[in-house]
Image (cartoon, rainbow, N blue to C red; front, side, top):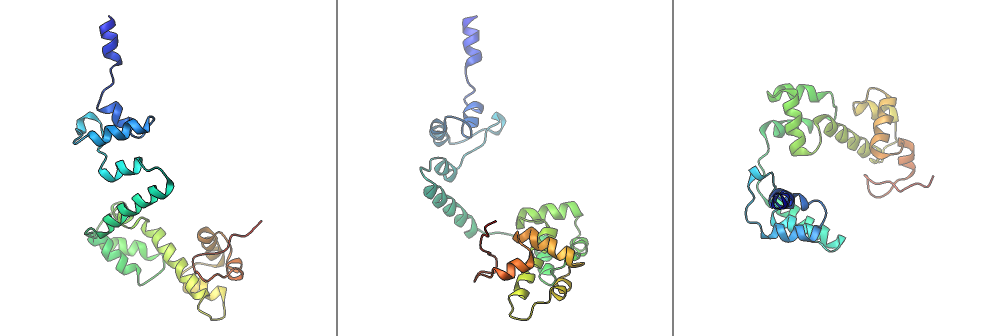
Length: 198
């Protein structure tokens, strides 16, 4: 009976230690991961590549960001084949900042709406609708900072907003302030506003 009890308490060297890599006992997990050359999928484990092992072993925030930067730069230098539907959609979205164009573009891709959204979000990081909203907001900022006299109604209409309430809602959603506060708090950087004390 004692032998059986001991056998039950024995850890599964694949599953338990792999989960330990993201749980407690961090240092032991890093050593374990570094020794592994291959992890079997059927064991329910995941494989920690060298950069991730380095990340787990970072001793400071500065070192963590340096490792992350190296990982991202290495990935950016690699070849990236854009999905044809996403490439087409991005080209089409460059011609208009109106979110209403999303449905038309989706139909032209030949994909279902759900499939198109999934592929687009995976490659771009935003859904098609949110991407167009961000582009429309960026257009608003460029018009505000163009040096011309500001006509809020004209800006709202030219950027595809239904009305001023819709315009102000989106502006606050992306900037955290209303349009007049943004103008009163101009900085040299279009996408930044100073933190205002309450």
